[in-house]
Length: 177
Image 1 (cartoon, rainbow, N blue to C red):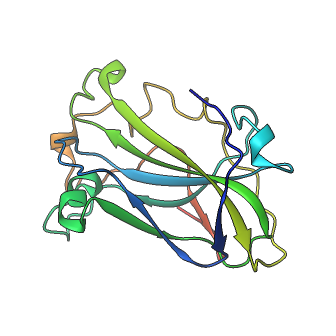
Image 2: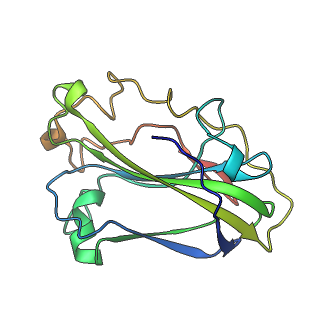
């Protein structure tokens, strides 16, 4: 359910934010992704469910150099937390952070891929003058047949890389692929 709240958490621009996945011990291999959307005014009056407003600011998928390659499977070793850093040049104001895990454990049948999103209303303080660029629509950015959703996750390797769905990551330095 997408129900805005009257509360926001104040966070300085450029600060580290840690998301706690309550004792995440699930065997859901897949990426971890974080999006940011600017609220037009107060987040308490904004549903954030239409328009290309979601900008991906962090992602981790499969990294063959890690002892645990899938990002989501590293959570138990990280106290069930996932750290990200907010862009330091974005405007001060109210935003929604969407942090999510995509479980690929049954992704050979794309309708069995599982998204685990969590949204958090924040007030960015001490920001700069940069407005978020146009992003993606959520819902809408993911299609079941996307190669980052419909795949055999066991086939992913250093020589067969994985790209999470939802487009590139944006940061203070611009877009990265």
